Image 1: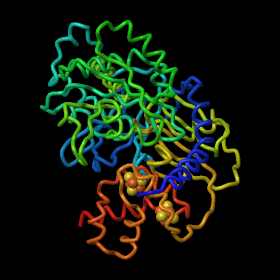
Image 2: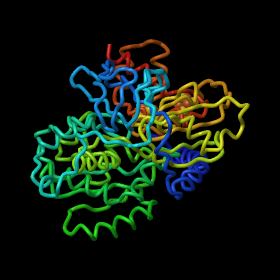
Image 3: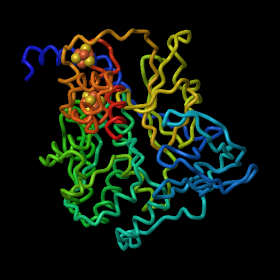
Image 4: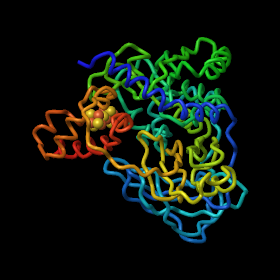
Length: 447
Ligand code: SF4
Ligand code: SF4
């Protein structure tokens, strides 16, 4: 049991730590996303974390169309087509940093600025769309290589393959990590694409109810959707405002808040008649079903205390972050200081040693911070990490078990339930990278 005064101290400390970040987040989220869709070069990843192998169907000097299949990624249980995201010439492979934090081969395409679409891209009529079954849509999104665009990168077609009856579809527009506002802008700038995507998902699952989950503080989104949903009579889609805390975007927390259903650890939402998707994935679904088009553009946030002008962008997949930093973000505030580059959110993202980063379709944000040198202090047993853990683990105990290599105790402390939200490290009084210990504990627990 934790005493109330300790809980109060913890809450106040966390509020003070996050106020500045939230000010930045609110400012960036209130400005329209800058369009940067015609860079000279685009870079498409060969392999990725889920698909470690890939083959190329083109050779240097070949002309490619936008959306053309130019290769295939291979995973243990599925293949994933690789699409060109502009028309132009394949000039070779180059290594850059991938979202997974590793230097990876990228297919470099010189943009011809003609945006010639591949013949496979074609608009379906409303009648053709209305006739599509779940199996038809599954095939379409498999060919379009649609994945969870909130960062999970899980193939969407596999979620579509469930045979479980679905009673409700939940759309995750919560975007709860600090700093990130890319989904916020997407929702404000393309509400009809979001809603049409949700309608296609509802058609596939023969489901007549959907909730778009957002944080209660996003009154601008609520207002826009309440207005636009009037155009969709009896759609069964509604806005659902959830609490304003991290990690409210974690699917278990979102489902509990939106439906009252508490999933058991490891339980699939579909077991309870629930299907959930990120809001960007719904726009990807809209493009795939309506135009037979893969994801070639996306919204991203580039922000953090290290750069002069944090902002949101709509870019082609394959854009170099360096282009955006130099042309739009005004460069670094303190160019002489070392930087921390994080791909994804500051709590769950991957850090890389340089800004030589390429936007893949699952990159939601790049956070750039001035590096602060600090030394981990000994644990003072304050209990902050325990108080902060949303899955009620005891991070400090897990850390101690890892340090003493006590495998039995590690297993007993259940580290596999950790969702890697990063809160234990963020809240640690002694600045210990507690989450790193939990990750190591997971490896031990699987042995
Ligand atoms: S990273 Fe894991 S152990 Fe740490 S607070 Fe989050 S869920 Fe708990
Ligand atoms: S690991 Fe950090 S947060 Fe947890 S008890 Fe020790 S000092 Fe406190």
